[in-house]
Every structure is written in C-alpha cells, then in structure tokens.
Image: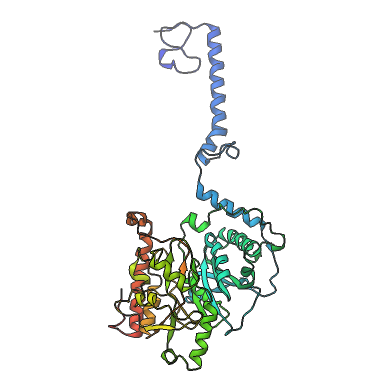
Length: 462
C-alpha cells in the first residue's frame, strides 16, 4: 500500500523515508534531511578525532594540572630523592677513582664498587690503629656520626646506593660531614656499591659542595629511600666485604652501624697486641688462627662507656646480651655470667677466655676484631633472607679458629631492648621469599665447604 508523502514502509529508517501511517509535509522532509546531514558530520568528527585517541590511550588534556585523588607514597619518595640529584656537582677528588667488582664474587659479581668515594681527611699507617668497618643505607647514615665520636681510629663505611638512593646518600653524607661531629670528616671514609642493573640515578663522580652547604634546614629528613620503596633486597655481605677490604689498617672490627663501642677500645686493644707480640700474654701468643671477640649487649636507654656501667645496668635488668629476647643463641657467648662477674682491670684489655665455635655454641654469631686476611662473607646471601653470617662462622670452625673473648671490651646497640612480637610470624611474612632463597644458597654453600674441608663432627651444620 502506498503511503502519502513517502516511500514504502520498509525504508522508514532511511533519511527522507517515512514511518507507516504517517503523513509528512515537504518542510518536515527537508528538516529531516538536514538532521541526517548534521548527524553524519558529528559521527565523522568522532571517527577522525575521538576514536584514534581511544585506541591509542591518549592522556586527557588536563592530566598534568589535575592531581590524582589517590597518592602513591613510594613513587613520591622516589621522586623527592631524585630531585636531590639536581643539587649535585663535580667536586675534584685529587685521586683516580674507578669501578671495581665486589671482593668475593670478583668478575662474576652483579655489583659495582667505588672505593674512597669520599675519603677521610686523616690517613693511618697499617699498624697504627684498628678500623671500624661497617655499612649502611641512606636511612641509617646518622649513626655514623655517633660511631665517629666513640671510635678513636679510622672508620670504613660501605653505602648501598641504587638509583636515587645515591643522591639521597650524597646529601646526607655532606650534611653529616659539614654539620655533624668534626670526627666524621677526619676519620670516616665512604665507599659506594650498587647492583649493576640498578645504577645510581646520577653520575657517581658527583657530590654536594660542602663549602656552601646550609645546615639550617634538612631537606632530606622525610625522604624515604629507593630500596625501601621498591623492596630491593639488601646485599649485606657485599657491604661487609667492601667496608673491610677498604680499611687502611691490618686490624679491623667488622660491625653494624647501630653498635657503639666501649670507651678506649682501640688504644686498649693495641696495648694487648703489643703484649701478645712481646710474649707477655702466653695464653694467646701461640694461638693461630685467632680472632678477638667483642661481646654485644642492648640497653633500655643509656649507652654505657665502661664495663662497670654496663654491669650495673645488667644487674638492674636495664641491659641484656644482644637479641636476648628474639634470638637467644645468636649472641649468648660461653661463660657469660662469669664475664659479668669479673670486671677486669680498668684501662687494660685482656683475654677473658679462649673457645671454639662448636656445639652447643654452633649457632653463635660473634662480632670480633680480626685481620683483613680472614675469610670473607658470602655475597650470595641477603639480609632479608637471614642466616647471612652463619656460613662465614661455619668456615671459621672448619678452619680451627680460636675465639679469644675480650674481658672489658663490648658493643652496645643503639638504645632500646628488642622483644619478640606475638605477631612476629605474620609481621615477617614478607621475608618468606627471601628466606627460601637464602636457605637454598645456604645449603649449597654448606655442600661446597664439606667438599673443600671434609665432614666435621665438631662443626655442626645448622
């Protein structure tokens, strides 16, 4: 059936068509045609402009000026540290510096090392003193200032500086050297290391100009480091080996940056070595190989300087041996009670006892003064995976080392007695992948040592 003013009903949808049963005027049909033309223009414009952006994920025009409703704190921390790179400049060092491999892994090492990035102002001969060797990340650099005021000798510090941590470390080292204790600039040498696949965000030759440094404001106080934000594992044994290898003296005390030494330790230890070399300390003179153990404690609030002060705090339960409540076997040493009772002679350091690291102390992790010739720490193990010092201690046992426990020397952790958290297993769940990796490497190292030294009934695996 024909429809007035239009075509057949099966073309009602087309421009100029009509709906069945409807009568169209000529004016209305003209308006309809123009509406269709307009719609075509709009669709065409969308196809030319909007569709390509939708397909290619073009950013919105106002994305730069419109802040996100949710903040990415790790990203902000990294950006804040990265901005510090712009404040660095080239400062002539007066010596040639070059990239090295890490001490133990050598050519196969995945780490780059720069020794004496910022050297100490004072130099020492090999037999003049004892070097305190330690390591840190940018977050813990302030402890070096406390160490420098308590240690009357050189300090060798290895700094882990992946990506923007280099710039953050550079700023904090400069601040400590300029605004901190004078002993920092005089005694502390700084060394850098980083993973080859995560190099510093700026040229490692750069530093902060210290002669124009402003101590009135610390712009880095609230900045969190790259390693922390990205969850990068800390290669603690690379750090230990770098700091020890860079020491200017024969004798070294490899320790942690939060462990503060007792007063007069360097002078008193050198006096002990003189007596040993002259044959006056017969108990120790003929022992080889040997290291000198420095007992470690933690205190509630006040860091003691003498053994008398330490013992008084210990008797009042304001001091305990290190990790007493979180890892009872780690730092409990043989005859601890006798060591507490026997004060020794003030101003003089002697051997309290000579022991082996054997059962039931086969899991003991002593900190000791040694030479740079002792076995290195295995650089395949991370701090997060735990047991990072166990393999080196096991090697000392297999090699028959004598552990000479000193009678008046000690180390104290920065104030605060650690206690086991009831939710420790849950809180430490983040470590699980690292622990699993370290465990595999640990077993591999144990097999390597057994093949090298043979089986031992005295030196138990753990």
